[in-house]
Image (cartoon, rainbow, N blue to C red):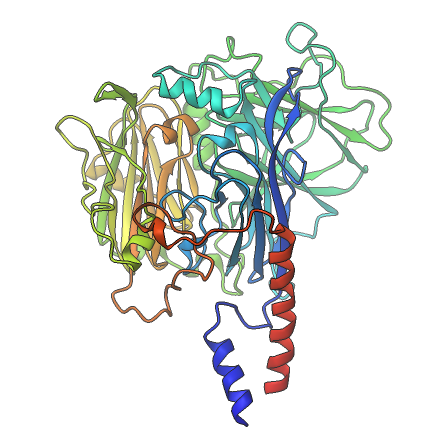
Length: 585
């Protein structure tokens, strides 16, 4: 091999890119404000490429994803890829603790591999309460063709984003929280960015655009449903149709029939739905508020239409009823417990999902995280985890580590809730690389909560009402608890999760309830391999943004630079790399 080839080989071995054998997918996202009226009231929403919701990202396991984001908002922006594990690259996670914001009028390119994952997820803007104005979209990771799937191939995929919605935009909602106010009841529920079908003229005004999903009789569809809302759990159902649960956030489930399923904020599910009805009329698709006073919250209901191609008329009459347990939440918890991992199915790899026997692994560290109703800290209304209201660092955690910036955070998050007065701090958990962590999420608030962990699929092993104790471990499911990234915690109850800390980085552990998250109910788990050789964690990307204590390192970006130019350059680089590797071989 001549010197030129050796130099080229050295360059590509040390580049940030994967082998050309791993395919690339490219997306350009222009994030901007548009005016829309999803509930009949004109308001400012956040669109991607002029669309609300944004485009669906559709990739296959192990593909490399390149997303160039152009920020046309008037404030900083980050996109978070909820449920995507970002193996070895927490730099791409798109959260305040992992990335500096993309300034207005700038573009920045995310690049990461969807390594060893399959499933249904979504993305959203993570800063400044922006998700309350939109900017979200679905994220599908398909299995490789060589990996068997535990059900027949559906005729088509349909993505459905459901979520509560306010007619006030995110800046008005954010100001209300900053002023110490509660957001109050949402104004409605959207299905794929659209308001409800007029099933009731008293509750639904004229002129609202609603979602219609057209299907063919006799076919089976995979419906990927995500609750992308602010703080409301929703019951999802389709009139006259069974929902066969097949997957949740990257894990195949034991297939069970449901007439409806509670989907909590931040959660995603896949259902197989066969169009086996007589199509005498269209059918209602419903997403209604749960774990609230449902009589008062009747308007917080999203309604779309399932339309057969041979339908004989419009949907009329009453909506299909949801669970009749308004004052007894046992049904909802038992339903959650019924969701089981399909341990014999292959996941993203050919080995069965159950080959990782989580129930027989010794726990190395235990954290009990307790949330309470909002409290006053230094005169400001805040939320807490274990008595600490999190303050986002001005310099992202791993960036501060890389440049040895001191005082950015403290590795002193308590293993048990504080007994003294609550306080505001940038206190994070010191996770042990390759440790096995047990986390108990204790909800001592009167509102439903759901919690998300970045970087991992954890095992949901238990939940119950009351206060968690050491004896509660006797109720854990140690065999087929679902592996997922977001779990619900009922009011006055606890949920327990187990996490294998095999992915170095700084990983966000937060409530998905947007108002509580904004007010401080989160922390990070810092996992560092003491053997720093870049094999288990990549260094900062070449285009890393700098802020906080490292602001002076940031070079200016030409405002006139095209967002497309960066991604086209990346595409050309991939082609050149492939050609060079062919030459080397």
